[in-house]
Amino acid sequence: MDFIISKVEKLKDEMIQHRRFFHQHPETGWFTFFTTAEIIKKLKEYKYELKLGREIVSPEKREGLGSKEESLAALARARKLLDEKDHDLLKVMEDGLTGVVAEVDTKREGPCVAFRFDIDGVDVTESTKEDHRPFKEGFSSDIKSITHACGHDGHISIGLALAKIISENIDDFKGKFKFIFQTAEEGCRGAVGMEPTGILDGVDYLLGAHIGFQATQSKGVICGVNKFLSTSKFDVTFKGKSAHAAGAPQEGANALLAAAEAAIQMHSITRHSGGTTRINVGKLIAGEGRNVIAPNAFMACETRGVTTELNDFMKNKCMNIVEGVAKIHSVDYEVRQTGGTAGGDSSQFITDLIYESSCESPYIENDLIVKNYDFGACEDYAHFMRTVQNAGGQSGYLMIGTFLDAGHHNECFDFDEYALLAGLDIFLRTAYKLSQK
Image 1: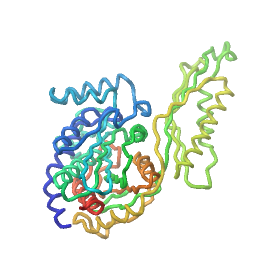
Image 2: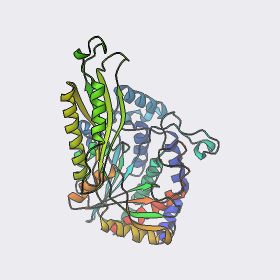
Image 3: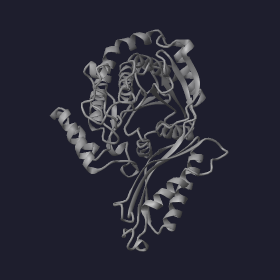
Image 4: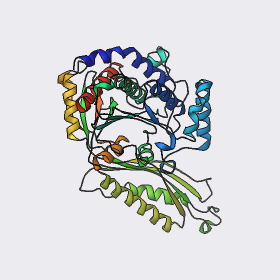
């Protein structure tokens, strides 16, 4: 497949340009209005059939949406960044129905191959140090508090380049292709809102990837990521009754004590012999004054498990604890799910194909290829992966090697853009292996 090299090299400068453009204008969560609009414009150029808005996002299934004020602010920013002639692209996105799915049918019998690329940034203020390359070279984030500090800007670039090559060479292929540009990956919020619309129906093969993480060497690759942890992310609000802490403590209902006891009990949940589990209460805010029985408390929590069943075990224990301490302290409570995803492993069939493609790729050194790796962390992609696998399809996830200036979600995060070429080359070779005419 030497002809692939020329196709990849031809898009080198364009990929870097796209990556830096999206890096400069990051958005988070469901509010990726401008990012989605720009992706739509490119995919229209490539002649794809597009699905948007309610076709790919179920509004009531979204989690961790954010406030109306945040949505309006993000929408106003997107309008300012877009040319006026493109403002109509925002209408179908409503209050955050962002992301896009692109499809093409070769009209020749064959499999349906899908690729997923996440498009959101994270809530981090980017570094302005002189040695931070995005700042030094003029493509750092144009907004405080939001940065592409996880590499999703690179994922967008790879996805657009792959879509362009397949469109320009559609006569080489059979079957169908889908490109899923997913929003709200951070916090594991997006897949649960998109999957119920049926975007994965009929998909035979689904591939996803991430730049970096455990693949920390340029020209390296992890072909098959396994042991994704399932996770549930939820907020707990306790509502008690205020009273004077000295004059009439018996008249109050202490929400602070309920939350504190719940946090301690959650971290004391007995672990499961079936595998790895995790629990964390990351935030606890409560009370109003030193001499006031606390009438309110808020907890931000998450559970994890090496399988979906183990995560459910942890979450159910947490729900029992919340209900129990609420009764003990005579307070009311509310639980709000803010995110979550399944656990699972890459299909070995896909891992083997990625391995073959990596061995052939001129952008990968064979002694830096890792065939299988146990991740032990969460990724929203796992929800999509499990859906395809449960329907009888095959799905896999790779990590594209790169040198990192700082860890993921760090203000100084940046990656070696050589990874864009490596990622595109591997994806394209695998597409040919699965769907060449």
